[in-house]
Length: 342
Image 1 (cartoon, helix red, strand yellow):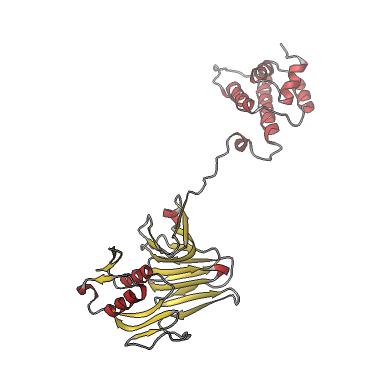
Image 2 (tube, helix red, strand yellow):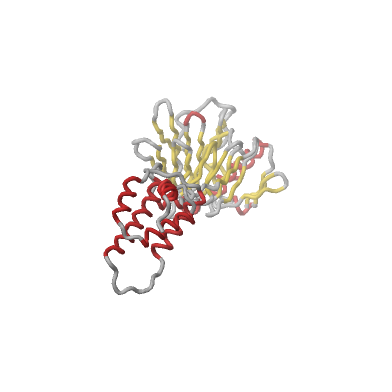
C-alpha cells in the first residue's frame, strides 16, 4: 500500500522516524512505477533536518534493504532493476541532504577521526638553580636558572625536537638517522651527536657555543644560508643588524676591562675568566674560590690535563663543571653540598 502524502512529505523532508522510512522504502521496492518516483524526486526539497540519532539508524536500514542477501533469482525484469536504482538514488539523496551545507563527504559526516593532540613534557629550572634532565633517547640537558624546555612526548622519539626558552647545555646521544634539534622560535639548532650550549634570549637574540661535534643553525622563515659550527666556535645573532656572526671561542677580539692582575695562564675580567693551557687542578681551585663551593677530585683523573677556554661569571658552577668533564671524558658527582670529579 502506498504511504499517505503526509508520510511521503516527511520522508522527503527527512523528518520521519527510521521505522517510517523503512515503510516508505518497502513500498518503493515493491512499486515499479518509475515515473511516479521521478516526479517525487523532482519535487523533493533540497535539504532536510535530521535528528542526530536518526542518521545512523536510517543508513543502517538503507544498507540492510539494499545490500542484504537475497534469494537467487534467475531473471530480473528491467522494472525491478529500475526500482533498485531508484532506491539507491534516494539513499544518495539522504546522505547528500545531510552533508550539503557542510560541503563534507558523507563518510566524513558519519565518522571523523579526532586529531591526535600533543602530550607536552615541560621542565623549568628554578630561580638560582640549574636543572639536569635525562631524555628518553639518552641525551642530557642542563637548564640554567629560569630556563624552560618542552617537547611532545608522542613524537620526540621520531623527530628528537625540543623547544627552549632561556639557556641550556645539551649533550646529544649520537644518531645519524635522527638529528637532534633545539627550536627557539626564530632559530633551529640541529646536531647529530655533540655537546653544545644554546642561549635563547629576549628580543630574538641567540647565542650558540659548540664544544665538540658539529651543529647547524637555521633561521626559520628566512632565505639566509644555514650556518655550520666547528668545535670551539660561537654563533651570535644580532636582531638589529639581522646578521649571524661566528667567532672563535679561543680568540678574544673584544676583551672587557680587567678585574684583577693576570696570573700564570689565567686572566680575569669583569664578566669572564680566561684560561690558557692552565692545569685543571688550578682551574678547579680557582672555581672553588669564586663560587664558594667545595670541589674535590681524584688525583689520577686530573693529572696532566690542561684547560683552555673562557668561563662566563654569569654561568652556574654546575654548568661550567659539566662542560669541563664532558670535554675531558670525566665524571661529575654531587657530594656533601659540593662536587666530586673522577
